[in-house]
Length: 107
Image (cartoon, rainbow, N blue to C red; front, side):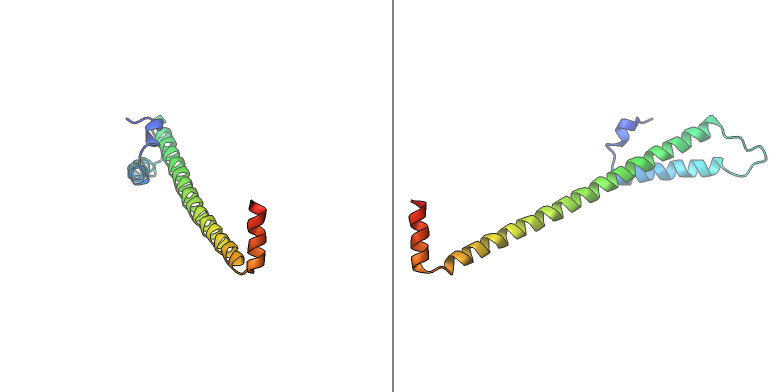
């Protein structure tokens, strides 16, 4: 017995293991029958499967979002470095008179 809140703390691998167990349980109870009436246990198992499936989907989306954010931050860092290099290069290409004028403006 584990609460829904506790499921969020589990890894995707652990959730997959629980899902497999519930899925096997559901398949076993869904065998063909002439008296095909779903029991409360069948409904409960289906609900548990839906909850596990939702949590895994959310966790996978969050992981993908974190990965994309990390890649984006790395790209921004590289662009900032290139901008700084180009600014330095532009400054180095200035003449002595231009550099002296810039220095005088800073004083």
